[in-house]
Length: 68
Image 1 (tube, one colour):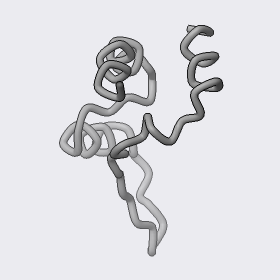
Image 2 (cartoon, rainbow, N blue to C red):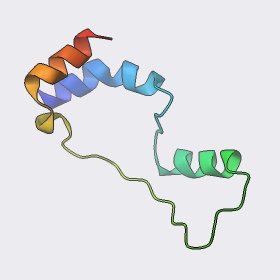
Image 3 (cartoon, one colour):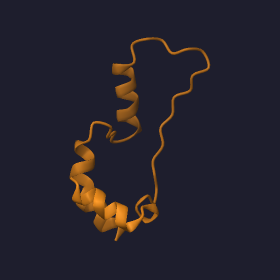
Image 4 (cartoon, rainbow, N blue to C red):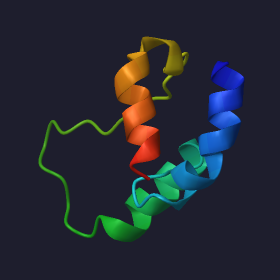
């Protein structure tokens, strides 16, 4: 079911302002958009969520999908 949900929501996810395709896209965005030097000690990172859909409560997940 997670694969079905991912396929159904893919279009919406890709169109969100916060969507970043992969690490390379993240690094390119940072290079373009961060023009002020970062303070000493700042660490930038990104992560990929694995198996997200099984952790979403069914009722709230359906409500969120229906609100699109």
